[in-house]
Length: 88
Image 1 (cartoon, rainbow, N blue to C red):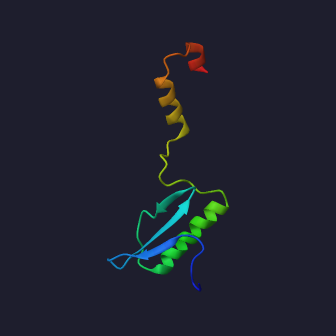
Image 2: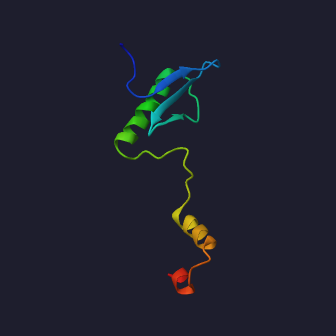
Image 3: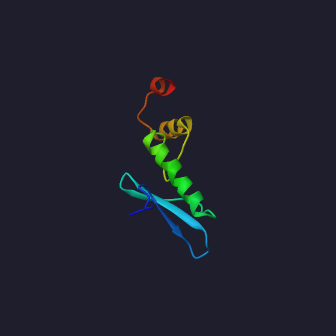
């Protein structure tokens, strides 16, 4: 099929805008915004493909929490740690 993309899909919405989506790691990811042209949607997919191939892709659905916040939350939930372990 001529013109068919190898990565992702672009669909035209009733509003006339375009929405990109792609499959990765067994899950479908839909762009969090729409764009005015099909070319912009294809450019978005090209960028995502480059991130995946470069191993720079971050799951947009994953909760992003700074490590220190995660560590403090984890320490706050632990009741079985000695004071010396907690201090370290």
